[in-house]
Image (tube, rainbow, N blue to C red; front, side, top):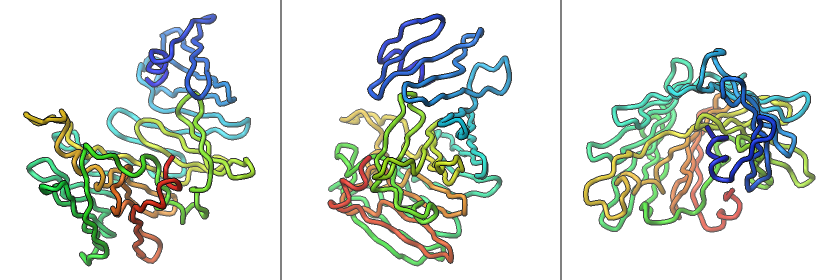
Length: 313
């Protein structure tokens, strides 16, 4: 549980059965019930987070309710099977393969994203069924990975040949909003982002200091909410890199990580049904985001040097 981890990292002291926890972003109080379960976090910035449990006897939380004001509470639910939900958005689930990599992401009973892997553990491709797909080659001797972006009909609409290696730093790391901006009705890039001390909430504000977007990250996934608490999109992180460390690996890491500057591990789904994918830490020149807009219009973005400051979070 994140509260326990932060307590170990930053230190905590007991105050009348509470824990006061200091973080880089501020402080919060953690409250436990009689069973020793964390039930509430009260942040120095006024945010109150309640952990949700399926029953009074349950020991693992299955959601959080983040109160950001007297009238707005942001709720997401999840479990250790990879199920995730937010009011107003479809329930999603992650289907793993025998290596615990994500094989499929489903919204209700419908696959919205599928992942293919090669026998050598490299990623073969990511698909938004019926809409678009990206095929990937293993790195060659120069650590080059080829991205082939195709429409649902198989037409090639974008190509990129990029350097992708676990030993190379990507251009930025964090949320990419290209795939959801159209559904939100504004471009979130100029906003300023600040994390709450409780760690689950990021608040985006415009230049006048007004809240434009709340992002709740919990259960390994994220949900974007409007200022009045309406869930607008999912940002879902797939486990696409094999965790096995190959014998003789100089870096002590999985060989599949050599594609992590080119392989989209994030899938986005908006309330209006817009689907997208993006690379969290793209290589220079990579197709880092691709999505489908109404009318089956496929759009994509390339990572270029001038986008570093605008896209970095």
